[in-house]
Amino acid sequence: MKGTTTASLFLLFIFSITPPSFLFEVANATNYPVLDIDGDWLRTGVEYYVVSAIFGAGGGGLALGRSTKQPCPEIVVQRRSDFDKGTPVIFSNADTNDTVVRLSTDVNIEFTPIRTKLCRTTTVWKIDNYDDSAGKWWVTTDGVRGNPGPNTLTSWFKIENVGILGYKFKYCPSVCESCTTLCSEIERDVDSDGQIRLALSDGSGWPFIFMKVNSARARGIQQVVNT
Image 1 (cartoon, rainbow, N blue to C red):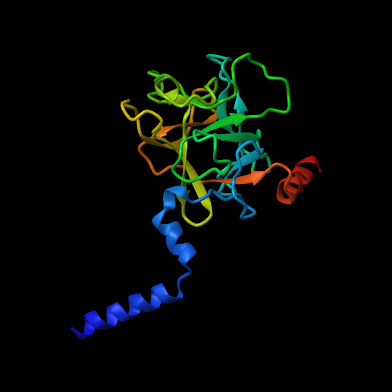
Image 2 (tube, one colour):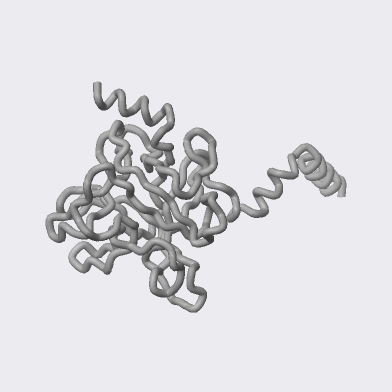
């Protein structure tokens, strides 16, 4: 009985010193904003670099790439150098009334390349058809932005927490309640060209961080690359 009383008093103490906002965020984790590396909320329509949260052997940023087997549409690859931030992306919510990108909610991800596109297809991410030769569901481009529903299932992704600072991508769309779809983590894998790509996986997902294109951190990395 004494142990139970002590535990109850301890919990009461914890709740008394914990800010209500934190308790609300824990209870509503799916509504909690995704943060960039500066601690700011991710916003729709704002350009970000998506960079590996693991430095060194973790590689650099995500970027548009091309496959020798099928040059178009372009594919999602990861740069090998830590100092290469990749190609900027923008996010679009299924809920167009919300301009904040939140955990576990459906989002479109779209590259915004600074160069002229090599393909006439879109740069919106999507899950490609199953690759029998590789045994993979690759993340590619030529997806559809907006119009959530059964016809755009392959173009919707979710962002989840990984540890304290990192985030991972997941494919588990909820834009069509009556649809049957895959629900998988997204990991890195190497294709037949030797390129690091994103693919559906039974693993735990690869951690990334988000960096505003116009942030001081991003400019600092660019200066190192150009030196």
